Image 1 (cartoon, rainbow, N blue to C red):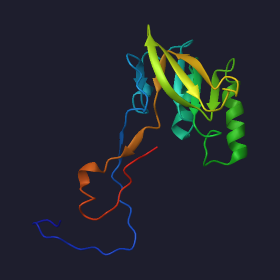
Image 2: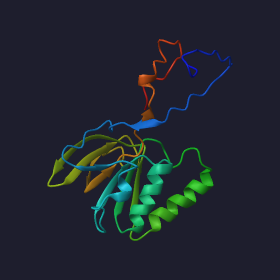
Image 3: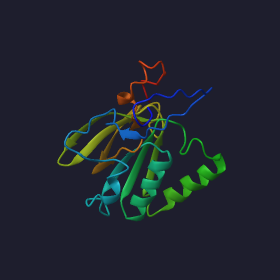
Length: 178
């Protein structure tokens, strides 16, 4: 709409509508746990040395937060459904970064690749999360329990398109996100 209420028509072959994103809750509930996202983890007063953090996903944000927490003395466990960290990055660079992260302190950063968190429970502010599907979970033990003090859920962002009315305007959107 134009100022004054008029409507203009703009012709294009392809368009990108950048509307930003919103945080979506993780696909697994962490009842009673301390759960942070990429915006709140930076001011988390309770990320103390010796605690253990569960990070869901080994993309850019997850790796950035893993290194930040590990350098603060927090033990970090990253659960990633893919086979390596930073899937869009150069493989050699990703391997060097992985080795550097694993070398902080005494194995301060641990990875479970090919794994997802299927369920979680809370007991006295500790989380028992079950990771399955690969990584360090072998064929004889497809599931194992992981205990954590808090969770960082950086991957769960979705486009903020629902209120734009794109569907009725004939503009297709992706309704389901991984």
